[in-house]
Image (cartoon, rainbow, N blue to C red; front, side, top):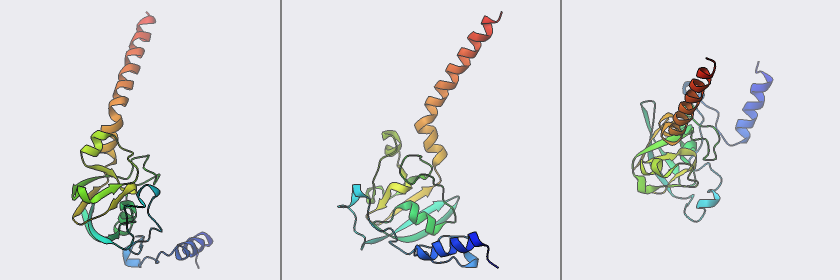
Length: 175
């Protein structure tokens, strides 16, 4: 007997246009190519839902090559290729879905640039905001720690050093 929550989830999945995963596929989400309804507002004049391209995605040492529509972002593509790619906000803010472009950078565009100039110059992108517009793109997913450290780590180190210095000063006041 199916539990009520699972039954509701199954109905929601079927209603959303997703195919039910096969038992051999685990819980992999299976979207059809171009499942994204439309391009993000920032890219509407730059993307064509009828054009598709192959992209090579790597996560935790496993590589999958899949075909994507230009309106499908790379996080959506990663969800088709892997069981649970890292993500959180889907709005280009949290950096959890960060990836490194290892090939074809000129054929990838971003809707929102939630990264600093240094990270973008080092070929990092947010997969939830990245769209493929040509051939030869390869992405290494799961780069959150690297991007977070590069973008915010320096500030955390300064803050920690400041707190340590304040603690030392306050300790000496006790004597």
